Image (cartoon, rainbow, N blue to C red):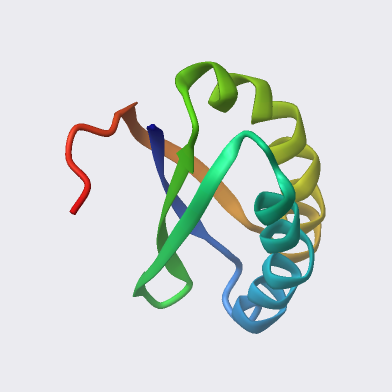
Length: 95
């Protein structure tokens, strides 16, 4: 399994709208994707989250990039969402 860790932010006042869009479009697409294992989103501050995206492999993570970019584009435009990669690598422990 391969993971990417991101920071996510959005424009103040857009939290609920951004999360609703995430739930409506990103969550079902990730669930249906043969490249993804899943996501974990942690709210770490006001309008700020950490997202761990888990993929079946590094190749799958690369192949998923166009889908991810298409899914987040509406949230970037409507909610001022940022998605910044802070680290990535092979998962070495799962408990």
